[in-house]
Image (cartoon, rainbow, N blue to C red; front, side, top):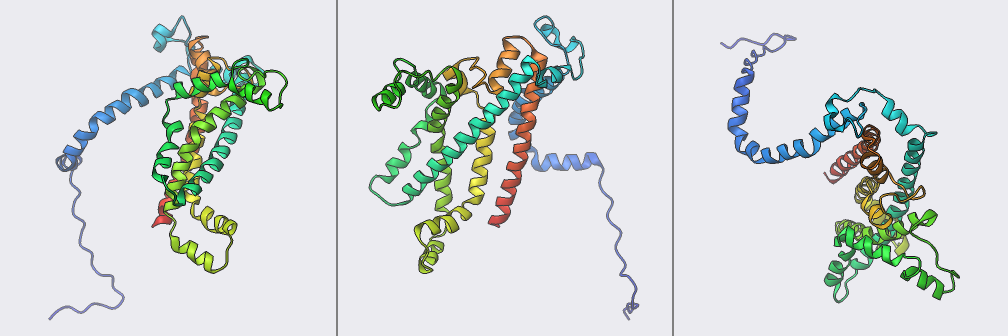
Length: 328
């Protein structure tokens, strides 16, 4: 006869199987995934050589006095602790004042270009949602500014903003807005010239991403809103924008990361030293590191920019995770 279970007694649990040794588990993993590890090995080595090892070296340089005389043997350079950070971030110092101004410049630059690019991209994406002859051709045509190499695009814009022969001043004078040629590539106006060029270069990417998001909105939602009597603006405000929120978050965070790393547009249009009004962290770090040979200070400022990027990257990963949960 089978033994009766005693009321209130806990069921007997079988003892857990002993865990195999670590080497045995490694052998099983290699045997099972060895081919996959072999395929990703070149990418892992490339990441180590191109990204992680230079990153570790840059962190070490930020705490040493590496200059023109000690760069050949930087591993033996004197250890200075936080002196490079103090010099790079002191708002009363020459470098520190330029660094904080460069952060403000790139923040202002990013806020204007991202907002303008989003508005233009949204307008174009909404227009391309409507059927019309040649829509596929127009969809490919709008990508031309985005796929144009930076050196070519910003060189053309530098010519357009030339004071005496540039098209911008010719048009403004022809319209009677200005009486004499304005200087766009030097001084306070320089950052606005770069903004215009960056908006022209970047809005097609926003249009492409937003158009993909619009195509993912079910048409039944719009049909239901039409039945409820919603106007075109109400459909855009209460249907399109909320359902595009995950795509919008991802687009804005990616754009923030790109804009804080802005370099090509400033370097091509304004040169190595864009001036106080248009200096950004990338151009400042370039000058202090490879022109003034303040490698330690340049590395310290690079770490600060990297910290900012890590913060936004954390928000980006969180937004992607939230988007994945919303799609489940």
